[in-house]
Image 1 (tube, rainbow, N blue to C red):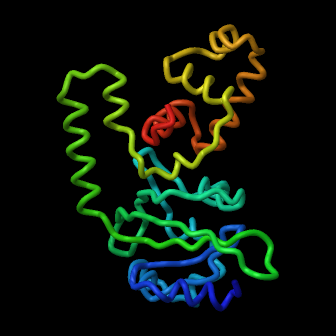
Image 2: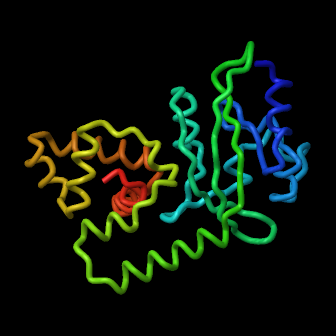
Length: 220
């Protein structure tokens, strides 16, 4: 594919759409994106998509230099569609994002084409109903986790090693670093290394945030 063909793909949909290179910089921005974000193509191209979208999921900020979707694209892994709350001049808006990977001739790494569709009313209703059920129903913890888990989270693209997943599951059960080290027969330093990798991969700042994001994504 040539770069001009990638631009033509972005322009071929009436939905908001844009393409980024393998560093997260916007290289194409269509009319739908201009309407959604009130930002011209000339102003958007060259910026990092995360700085414009300022994306949030149900657990907090998602967009960062270490974006999980960008990592998946670099590794040439297919990316499932996901829900993201983006910043617009009219306030935050929930959208569903589909991602296509494209290979452009004579460039380094794959490009990602993102198609963004508004789902604000549906998503807000979904969250209200789910929160009501979780707060009002007396359910076992595993059923609560199943209810709050979403199959439309960018965090589900995270690839955790078996050891990291074991560590995360123990954290979710309230285990301390010392207890995890004893149960997995590894050192406290190794446990802390696993936890740091988990936080980085899930774009989380605390253990609790990592647990919540993993639960919402159905990873644990």
